[in-house]
Image 1: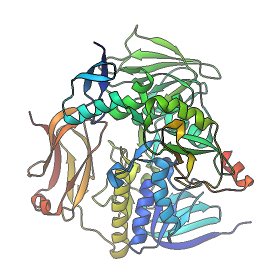
Image 2 (image 1 turned 180 degrees about the horizontal axis):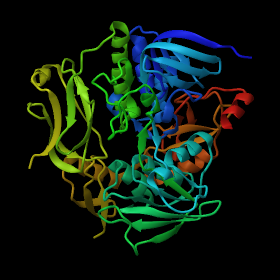
Image 3 (image 1 turned 90 degrees about the vertical axis):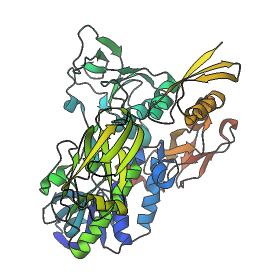
Length: 418
Length: 131
C-alpha cells in the first residue's frame, strides 16, 4: 500500500545524529527554531556508542567520560525536548535548494528546509583504498568495524591480530582485543612516528608489550577462506617496501586503522565545493558551505581528534543555521583563510572578520617551540610542541578582529622560534 | 642498581624518563623536561593506575552487551582480576548510566558502573537489531 509522499517544512534539518548533529540540533532548538534531526541508526550518539573507552569531554566538561556517557548527556536533553527526531531514517536526496527526500519507518517525506546541517561523520578507509595486494579472505576489516562487533554485539572477530596503522583507533582496539583475551602480535606504522596520542601508545601498547613497527607496512595477505597470515615489510623514505625486509606473521585478524574520510556524498549532491586536502566541504566561520543555507560540522568537514571540538563546531553550525533560517543571511565571509608555512590545512576556509572565530589546523611535521600566528598581525600563540597527529585549535577574539580589517586573506603559519 | 624506563604521557613530546630505584624507593629520575614529567613518573613508579572500560552481558536490551567502567583508576596489577570478575556478570535491562555493576571490585575500594543506559525491549525488536 503506498502512502504517498508527505510534504513538510522545517526551519532546520540536521542530517546525522552523532555528536556534531546532536550539538547543532540542540542549539537550534534552544534558539527557538523548528528542528528535525535525522539518524539512520536505531539510536542517537553515532560512533560514541561504540567508543566505550574514556577520554571524552576533557575540554568541554573537564571530565574524562566514556563515549556512551558523553552521548547520553545529549540524548537525554534531546529526548526531553521538542526536536523532531527521526531514527531508522535514510536521506534519499538533498537538492541545492534544500529539499530533502527522506525514507522513514512511517513513510516517505519531502522536507522543505530553510537551513540544512550536514553532520554525516566519516567513513574508515578500507583495504581497497590503500591497495594491499594478496588474497581476499575474511578476517580483514577496518578497526572501527571490529570495535562495533566487540563493544556492541559481543562478538570477537579473531584470536590473533595484527593492526595496521597507529592512529588512536588502532591503538585503542589493540588494548581492547587484549582485554578480551586475543593476542595482538603487533602494530605497524608507515611513518617514523606513531600517529595516535602518546598516552595511547603507552597505555594501549607498552602496557601489554605489543610491539610497534615504525616505517613498516603490510605487503601481502594470505588465506583462502579465513585470513592465515600477513607479510610485513619495512619501507624506505618514499614509503616503498624494502626488498629483503619481508617477514611473515601468522594471524587470523588484520585490522586497518589507516585514516578516516569525511562522508561527503550529500555535499556533492547539493553542489557544495569540496577541499581536496580534507575531502570535506569548504566552509566559513559559521560552517556554512558555498551553497547558501547548507552547513556542515564535525568529521564530515575534516577529521577531528576530540569529540569536544566536534561538539563546539556543531554548536557553531547550529548558531549559523539559526541565523540563516531566521534572517536569510550571515555576514559575508570574503576573507580567504590560507594554510601558510608548515600548515597542512586549516578550517574554516573563509571568514568575515566581523565575528570572533576559532580555527583548527594540522601541521606538516612534528616541531618544537613554535608560534602559531596570522601573518601580518600580532595574533600569535606559542606552543612547546606540535605534531600532525594533534589538531591545534586557536581562537581569534573580538578585540583582535581589528587586526584583520585590512587583510584580504588570512594566512596562518607555524614558525619555529629558535 | 636497577633501572626502569618510562615514556611520559603528560604531553605529546613523550620524553623517555629513566628511574633508578632500590626496592620501592626512587633514587634518581632523569630525562624529564618539565615538572609534570617528574610527577607522572613518580606516580607510575609507586602506584600505576588505569581506568578499565569494557562490556558485560545484558539481557532484554537492544544489544547483548552494555559498556561499563571503573569509576576511577584501579591499580594496573588488578586489571586482570577486574576483567575476570566482569566476565561473570550478567545484567537485566533496564540499567541506568552510573548504576553499580560490581562494588569494591577486587578489593580496590572502587566500583564498576554502567557507562550507558539500556531500556528493556521486546524480543522482536532485539532480533531485528542483531540481524
